[in-house]
Image (cartoon, one colour):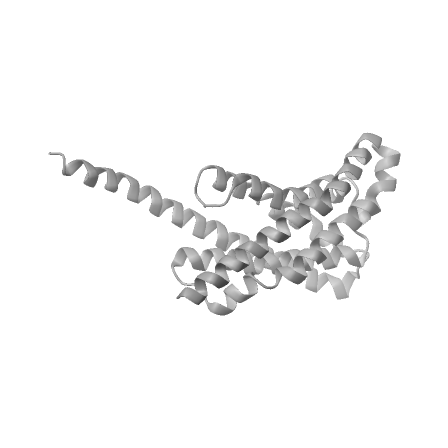
Length: 218
């Protein structure tokens, strides 16, 4: 009688694990497709509209796609992934602040080549990250994809972070005029950026070291 209990428990857990993997595979695939759409729009609109006006065609989709990343905090909190919810929240918070706290209320702040550079860096980062996660769930990750995942961030992270700070700074005059309290929040966020960037950048370096170390053991 006792030997049957673990078997029943295993059967009860297995479907949940399988459904979670299917959901995460779908989420990562959908996210990759949406970020590819953002990049496509950026590349098409740049020569047509120029740096000054490209944000008008890209920002609405960008805000929606980036907001989806809040689900990743939920995934971590529910144990769907091994990441810490706090770490994931730190990773998505700066971008969410940028799209909802800067671009949405002050769209004119994006009328600069820096906006395009930031979006490009975000897109390439996500077009590597989501396929990497998807391939891990499928049980096989190409070496070239793993290489990109743990090396491109050396260039893309500084471009993204510095662009976010610049766009926030660019929006400050408007915020000071229309929303002085929000301008104060923006200044605080700009002060927080350097230490937060250091934490996340070194976190990626540690992840890279673990990935390289595990690959050498194989």
